[in-house]
Image 1: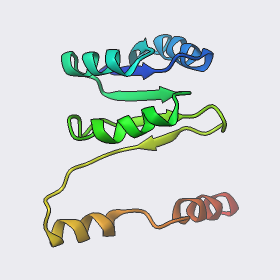
Image 2: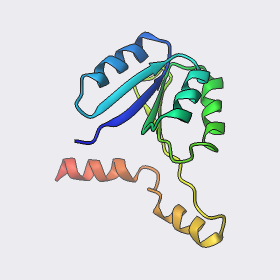
Image 3: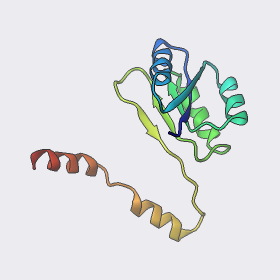
Length: 124
């Protein structure tokens, strides 16, 4: 089984708990760091499949946007601890031409379509 290398950025009990939960799975090799600087060093030196940011201030979320320049294909999961949801952010580079842009927009799910599809399956 291929394992995913997960880097968790956070200095909260939730980040610590997530690290322990993922370490106990067969599919994840997990490391937790508490600063952006350490996260950057790890991203530069190791193959990381996903970055999970838990309970980090808004400045850290803004840092993520600039980090995409260096790691454009790195999926990021973010939780700000004020909601029971985790936001999944996936970046992908495309050519700066009209045809790829239109194809990318067309491939995006329409707002609310997944929820509608789920509701229809539940009723069936």
